[in-house]
Image (cartoon, rainbow, N blue to C red; front, side, top):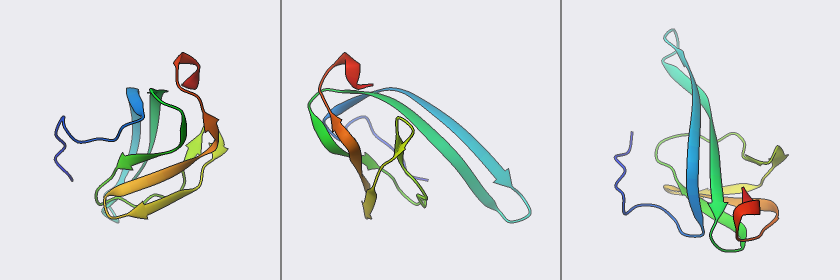
Length: 91
């Protein structure tokens, strides 16, 4: 588990809310889960980054649409299925 600090993060968006659903299987010592993030674009976006340490990502979706992603170290880059314009309608 990573320790996060307020100065960590990525530009281009402002997170409004996180919703985590976790499933713990004591028999296998595995945790699976889903994170839903509500964010506001503060600039036009074609992709964005999330800080992520020590977890495996199986799928990324935006607005219910599959979004391609890549991983380099602790950075997960998600490519928007369609361009996201800056502003309140970007959520």
